Image (cartoon, rainbow, N blue to C red):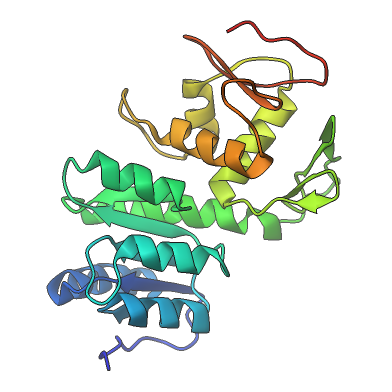
Length: 247
């Protein structure tokens, strides 16, 4: 049994850290709790999954290397039942880990060389995206319809025909951005600036990975796309019905 950190029961922002590095967990706790966060820690993969599914959290910080069950397996199981924002911790320069995590539904990643200020900025960004659904605008934003694809910006739900799509927060934001500009190219930079809430390296592949995941959920084929087309040296475009796109 792990020694979960104690915190105020009235705190609204609860963070779960799943990492077997207890010193790192305490460092994160000591930084976040004075800022109003309640921090809970689990030190093995199975326990982290159990706690994440049992309780309600604003975000989960999840390490890749864990005893009992690695972070990828925890994330895979978690995504079967929950869309809680997940920030994955990866080793320095471990791009394959980042890509796998994003493909499995992580909202963002953070190298283990992170600064506490960077951690806070990333946490705020993924939580901001996940809470947009609870914001009630003064005027209802109309649903966006492109062929048999329906995107409801206010409810933050999307469907293909009568089949709901199970999307992460950033996948939904990407789809909405593309749907609003249906028939027009959105560059990677435009998509990054609109949905990511943070600065990216010039060679960052996050958008490509999220687009790939979106295509899978749409049942799309990148070589002969029905929905999301890649426009070489430009970006991505959501195709309108019957529209031809030059490669």
